[in-house]
Length: 456
Image (cartoon, rainbow, N blue to C red; front, side, top):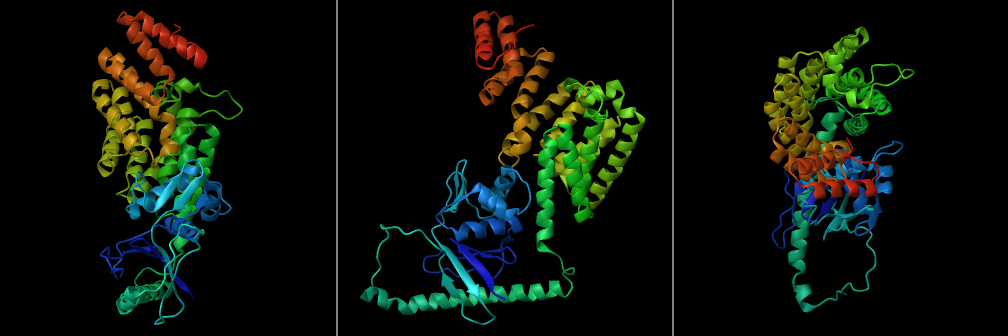
């Protein structure tokens, strides 16, 4: 069976396993290390393969999604996350790319200066280097033989010999490892390398649905999390996601579809607790199931921040606030970018009458959202500006108008016509005597968006 290895600049990737090797960057030496420096995820390996097959050419997003997730419905954000992780593995700066170039709203292009396929048909045979199909360029220089070139033949052959020997060693190691896996040796028995990738794709889709906070999307998230649990019952990821989704059902959509929905403004933890939605018999049963799932998630993945966050969310809905805060602290300790756990910590503290203490967590949550925005844009984008405006509102509650104004202006830099920030800032300006600027803000909003955020 033919095996393939791909060289992209100084990186060497074994396509069958995703193992990543670093070739020397020294001039005149392209021998790869025989020790892998990492492993690309299956989707990242597949993406690099597709881009390499059309090196130098634009590959449209739709084409990449169809090839990476055949027969599945995924968002552009799923592809963006794969590209981001691949770039990180290849140490490719998205702001000054040397390997993968983003063509805004269209797709991606492999722009590496060196792209080579290495084909090995059987152990011990010499490896052949071949370049992928490249577009013809009339400006490309024509290389002719010269005395200088002829004098370097022996050095070139020597370097190729070292390259081939290094890659041959790598492939032999990989073959031995593959035999152990197939035969069920100490590596844990046979397994499908794509299964983890498929589960990861389902989790990403479920997370995107969950973040939209609509009944129908939450139902789709629940179905996908259940499928993840069926595929990987010992991973814990599906259990954590399902626990979160069940809690959201209790807080936001406790009524049957045939009945009027709970008003959007009251679909939060504070209102749910105050109205008794979390103590109704059906709610109690769902929360008990969510608690069992979250505890399973923590037991199966004790180092996973999302598992601890899910457990905290269930405890908060059950009004076990001390346990909720402890679980959220565990999540934040494991991942300082766990913005959802930071928000929920602030929420529990505020409900407990500790708003000044909650403010630090709200601000940390916003900063964390900014740090991971590119990786989690589908989940963060709907809430990013509103989170900044909410911080402004909370500072107004604390009679800290100067801090509130800072956050309202920060919101409007992100979303120039955010309703809450426009209303809040106009109120502060009005109270400080700057009536003209306040009215101008409201008039501009009314002309551009419609409605009057300043109308009392």
